[in-house]
Picture 1 (cartoon, rainbow, N blue to C red):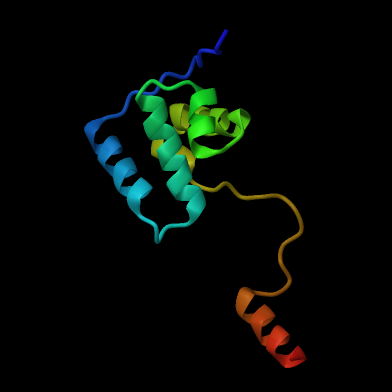
Picture 2: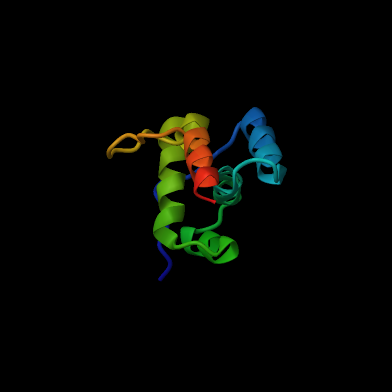
Amino acid sequence: MPRKSPFAIRLSREERQMLEQRSRQYTLPYREVVRAKIVLLAADGLENKEIGERLDMPRPVVSKWRQRFFRDRVAGLEELPRGGRPSRFSPSDRRARESDRV
């Protein structure tokens, strides 16, 4: 028996337009495009399992982004700060060090 998500997504016209635009922008990071597609498919009434199959993603990942959007709307699709030790070098410093090794 398929699981029915308690997080039913209903989009405003503005949210749908923004998410559709984001889902078609291939210049955005892949993660942003996929998150927009997850929410759009959820708003169309698809179950998490079916969304996962269409996007080749695990169901728990789909569930996570559905819940985050339900709770925080578009802001919930943004990256949250991650834990762990801060980077010691900026990306430009790393490139400079790598070019020195060659």
